[in-house]
Length: 154
Ligand code: FES
Ligand code: FES
Image (tube, rainbow, N blue to C red; front, side, top):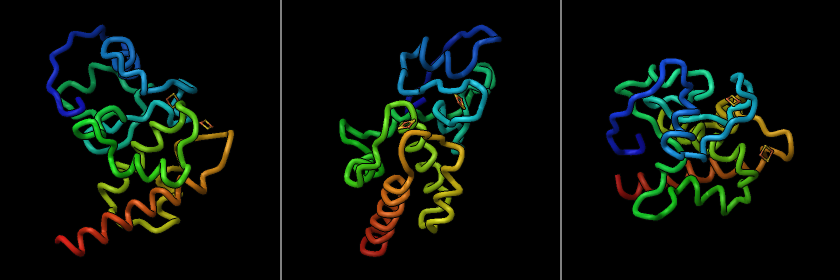
């Protein structure tokens, strides 16, 4: 998890979100609906964004899990996180970690998505307070920057 190996005993009925929040104090993993509807509890599990409220902790034995806490490197925010700041795409602490993780997983599979693909990609992450325009802009801008860098330093 987040680049470290852990050995941890957990009750069979415990959900992944509860293990992360209660046992590992990873409170960036938020609980919104608790029923797989809102995406606030998103983590990256073996490369895919998943709702941690729907998964039993025992199911992730041996898996790689990334929470938003695992994105920074040596105390520096990940480039996507920086793009969210630059484009004012940071919304509340409930939806933002899940949106960033979903976008991260999307870009790992599709490094240069279209606007439509980004919108479809983050469709499972709900915010009912503001808009998605700055979020989409931040993701597209970060993807374009990464691809420009790749072109210069292949
Ligand atoms: S809390 Fe898991 S999808 Fe809403
Ligand atoms: S749920 Fe986070 S800003 Fe609306």
